[in-house]
Length: 107
Image 1 (tube, rainbow, N blue to C red):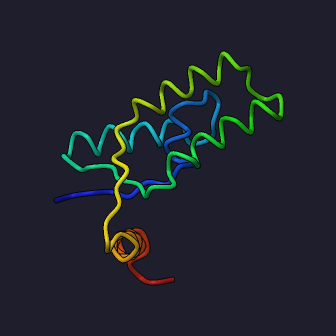
Image 2 (cartoon, rainbow, N blue to C red; image 1 turned 90 degrees about the horizontal axis):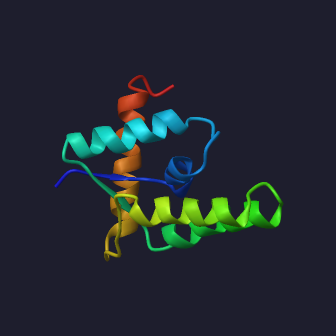
Image 3 (cartoon, helix red, strand yellow; image 1 turned 120 degrees about the horizontal axis):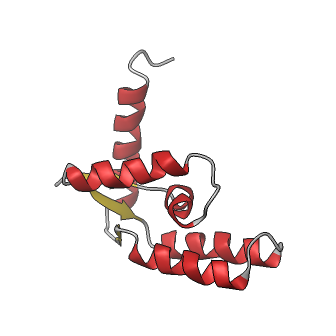
């Protein structure tokens, strides 16, 4: 099983226009789908993404209508929220693998 653990900050970029690295976030999701990689997230993921949207509404940086559109995008995001007895260990394994891939010299 190929999987990629995604942070809430990555998926929020799909829902909010003008976000830095939004194009890269979309590319990550598309490539993962094309390569048969499941996007996974821990149980607190849903609270985290909703909190980002809600905070922007409270701060006046996002209208309620835009927030509703963002929530709809997030609700359709291809992320499987999982709970597993070894979830934390698996997330660390994935993070370590990515660190080694992105930083092969360990610097």
